[in-house]
Length: 94
Image (cartoon, rainbow, N blue to C red; front, side, top):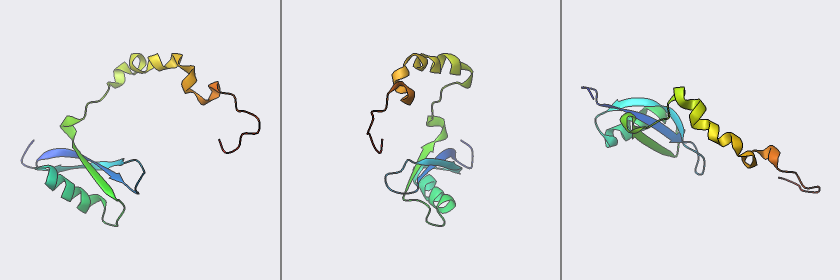
C-alpha cells in the first residue's frame, strides 16, 4: 500500500444470473472507495448489474511453473469429458 491506496481487482456481472468477469483493477484506500471507483470507471454506460472488488493481496493463485503436476491428476478422469458418454438415439436438445 502506498499513498494511492491498495490495488483492487474489479469484476462485473453484466446481467443477473451470468458469471462475473474480470474487467481491470484500480487503487483505493478502502472497500467502499474501491466499489465507488469501480462503478465510476467500469460502468459508465450501465454495463453491469453487480460489481465485486477484491484486494489484489487477497488473491491466492496456483503457480504456472507447477501446472503439470497441479493439473495432471485430472487426466485420469475420463468421465469428465463429454466424449466418454454415448448419445442415446432419439435424444433431442442435449
